[in-house]
Length: 82
Image 1 (cartoon, rainbow, N blue to C red):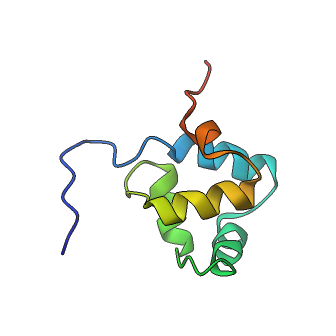
Image 2 (tube, rainbow, N blue to C red):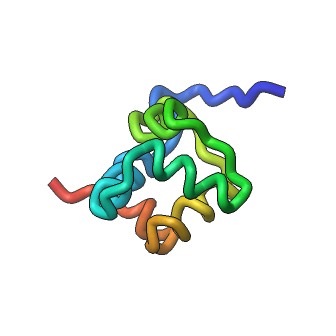
């Protein structure tokens, strides 16, 4: 069944995922490969779509991302400061 989300942005964590990924000097491909070690299969293109808020993120994906990025889930939800 397709997920129907009626919002322009499909997630609120994309910017923070990108920020922390880049701080850890992980490419999107390397991040994707690390997620696979946790049985989370997100291709490089989908990582890009998450970071640009074009793809939703499941709770399982979010947990694995936080573990790999070595941050709390709460930190992924914190607003970016300008």
